[in-house]
Length: 368
Image (cartoon, rainbow, N blue to C red; front, side, top):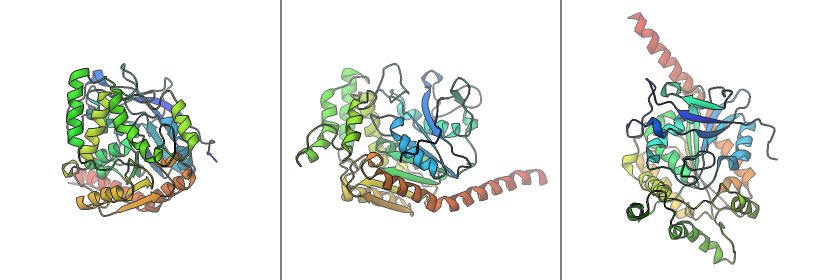
């Protein structure tokens, strides 16, 4: 069952960067209006939603691949929103697929916030929304969960590092494990950018970065490309045939990805405003990118060492990297929903208490 009865809305979101509503980068830098990009967004909002789940997809794919998961979560009463990341799907700069821009890291968090804020606004007739910083809710009307997959898990982790108090829960699915030589790889990519520019697409770099994951399965007698994605061959064939998936990555994409891997496992990246934030690590037992039991436990240990106290680690048998599209996907969708719903009542109460405290503080100003 694919739950196709739930109505989907597709629209575009751009950050308004003029006047008082000025968005700033994660480091406080004022963003350039010239680089503002209309991001292609997909959302499903059922009647009387109990929460909002914002999904951040992985590298070299597009948002429509998550429609089955989105529809299932909507069937469980959740509003779901997802956008094509810069350089993916229909969120493209003039340089095309797999080019994120030299300033992609500056837009990392504000893109997420603008898309989230759009959930609470009607879609205009022309399908294009301008979201100002003032449109972001000071207190969330509903609990807000961030679910990142693969590179999207790194992005979600980066967001939570400085904004964990804005979330009701964090899901990191198929998250790349800690890499010993990431700083060296990042220096090498920076050197390559001097040779060919940010839009250069060196094929040998792609072979080293992703094709190596195939070797594990080739040694087991399998053949073909993208074997590391799933055990589900139909999903692999659909990925291969999709002109918006599997593009040859640019230097800007590698620099972006490697910076995220480096920063994810840096203690200085985490402000730790909410140590009891519910965090779930989700991965397939045969996922070479998450790294299997050893490296997933290493990621859990890192977060615990940082001081987070509410972490669950779930490793799914007979699954590779794309757990939401693998053979056991329906069971994984169900577990994903159950994780969220298990804490949602408490998170709803927390929001109500925050709203009550905010109202009390506001009215006290007039009583003095």
